[in-house]
Image (cartoon, rainbow, N blue to C red; front, side):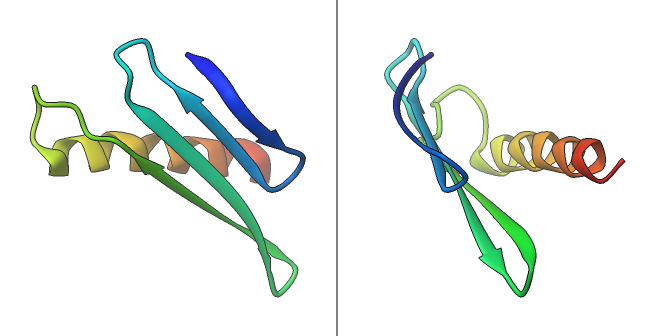
Length: 67
């Protein structure tokens, strides 16, 4: 991937090798960090499967930072 935007504690944006983009935003909400990832879906797998995969990554990240 090629990172095209990094804003400290706010956003990470990158373009994957196949041209799809993913953006992760970090937002302070009542003293906690809300993490939101948006991504361009690929054409080989159903969108719901892709959402589940990204959600699993975020869940693992949450466990890591809280552990």
